[in-house]
Image 1 (cartoon, rainbow, N blue to C red):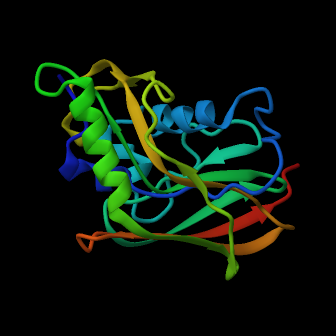
Image 2 (cartoon, rainbow, N blue to C red; image 1 turned 60 degrees about the vertical axis):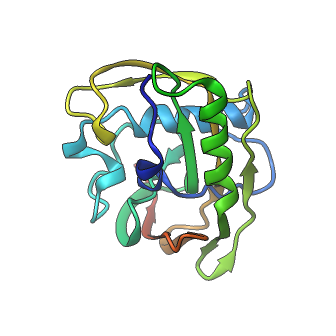
Image 3 (cartoon, rainbow, N blue to C red; image 1 turned 180 degrees about the vertical axis):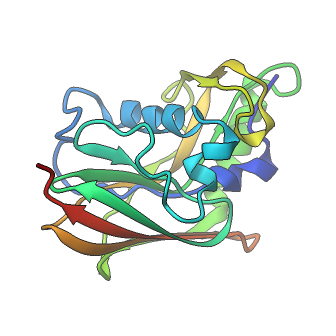
Length: 211
């Protein structure tokens, strides 16, 4: 088995803010498919250029396409990043989330139990855009709902060996945020669990028209 161990889950913690309305970028896909796609995006980079491990925001443009952009959480503590985005973009960002890959060490039930425990441990989850609270999307751990494959490159994150993996459970709190008019905006997401683990990420977003 290869799974994301409990100690590594905070690395992928975050939340995604979702405003009302269908996703304009991929309107035909259900929200779960978008969340799965965020995982595939976040795990697809070598650790040396991973947006998850970015302390400045310089990697925020990697792998982006269309009007919906994926943004990363952090490995714990507080992180401030700068990111330039096109006008009329939307962003999907995690407050906290977890997945599990069953195998020789953990059964699917054990994976489920671990992700359930992680999800329930977070008692604080909030996001603001320019100081205005944003609506959160909750993704509780539901067996069979988030089953997807993802590829790990050489020197990938979390100590995974290169290869193709299959996650059987995922959970978290997320949001998709519609960005306002061009200018500089501040997006902040924060989560804390009962063990005192805090994920606090601020993006200074420079939104501009693209010629």
